[in-house]
Image (cartoon, rainbow, N blue to C red; front, side):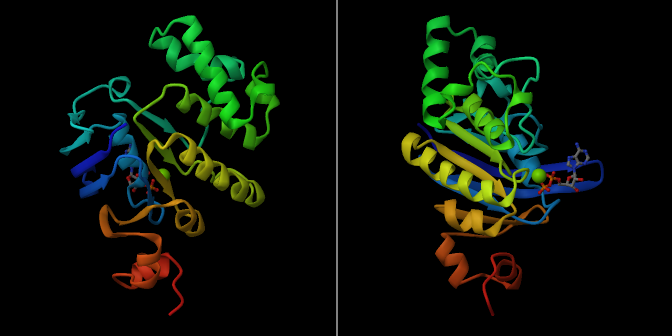
Length: 238
Ligand code: ADP
Ligand code: MG
């Protein structure tokens, strides 16, 4: 287990500065949620933590390990995207095993991890199906399962529920909470859904236009928003 430190992350695309010096500390075992409007840099930040996007400045530290220059596979991170990005031609079992197979884990260990993740997510009966034969919620579970089997030090979730209908979104929210109670993995979770943030977060980070507006517990942000933007975004009546 390990915490995550993002230290003064900067990133531009051409002339557009998307991350303007973002620093976030996620404690070991903490569930931190980033909220902010569309285009404020949430996905870019997560992709940079995962190593899918190179920063122009700043550092990413996991535990005591500076991973800034490392390849995604060397970071001990697993990321779940909004589009689940499952391989359509592979079964659920194979989709979940894929990362471990690439990492050349041995067969018995892969089978053990897939079984364990399937059990946690209640998808043991789906292991031989192809993604096309799954519902949205089931696909979402498989995508999470693929992250779990790798036993990462850090989970990154980028709006994992935004493609689901409202009912399922509420149910899956509880699944995330349960998953976190069970595994305790340090988590950075992005959403633009205020209720999701309030329900899941130990701490909420409000991002606006590539900068952090405020960081605090859901209760603190609700009761003492630093400014009108935070107040409006987290729905404080005032
Ligand atoms: P969010 O996830 O908060 O909606 P993003 O991180 O996806 O925001 O995007 C932030 C800004 O960066 C947006 O203006 C977006 O258009 C821009 N952007 C993201 N990725 C790229 C890219 N690969 N090339 C150019 N611009 C990008
Ligand atoms: Mg995004």
